[in-house]
Image (cartoon, rainbow, N blue to C red):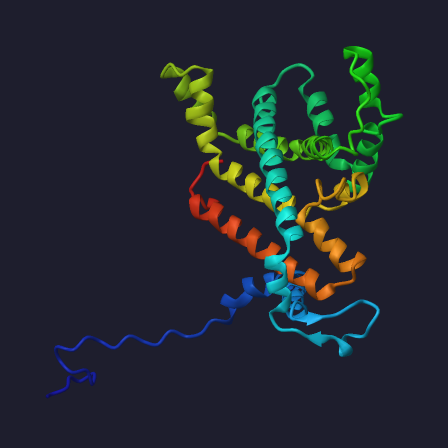
Length: 314
């Protein structure tokens, strides 16, 4: 077949030049590399180390070189352990009540204070104060408030309603109620801050259009505002779900998991097995279970509505 003066065969497309590699395309990745390295060192390595340790029977007092490799024995023991199932059930109940109430209260407070009203800034400051208190201090404060002898809760219940003093932290149902109430007090402001930020960022044009169309407050709230901040609500739900499964300090100080195992969350059960019983391998196996549960629930929430895949004007 004849070639043209330019060396190209007639009827064939001109070959495309090969793209040249531009080193500048790697510049953004160099900037995020330190953050990725820190995350790998602080997150990935501990998870892999816990997974590796779960195949051994190791106590703190002995060097790891003398640890016994037991294969899947720790996982078999964990699945048959009624204490693990009980702690997991306590965690599920605790998470259901705290997350449900915190989401409802946080959204309600945000809807109440989103508009510029007199004293709104004072109320917002008061609402976020619990977030500024460390978990250890929160546990100490509420342990004192629920004290059967000198606690303020018993004092004012008796003064106002004539209720006899209750042993709040010594009765299983009352102790569970106490830790739920404490968590609600501490973390409802977190939901409040996230939701009110989303509400105040909503475009005024959309809200004004809904008013012109005749939407009342309920319709504007549940058909316009909340659907528009759906991604923010999902993020808040996801973050609180993760926090529930890693809650430890407040329960450890208030009840220590008691009475019995009424308030022993799975994270506290892992701590007790690791440092009280010194069963680090077995505790690591339970920690792996905890990671799998959190990952599974998080994946389910993101599959239902992934904020990264949603377009929003907020």
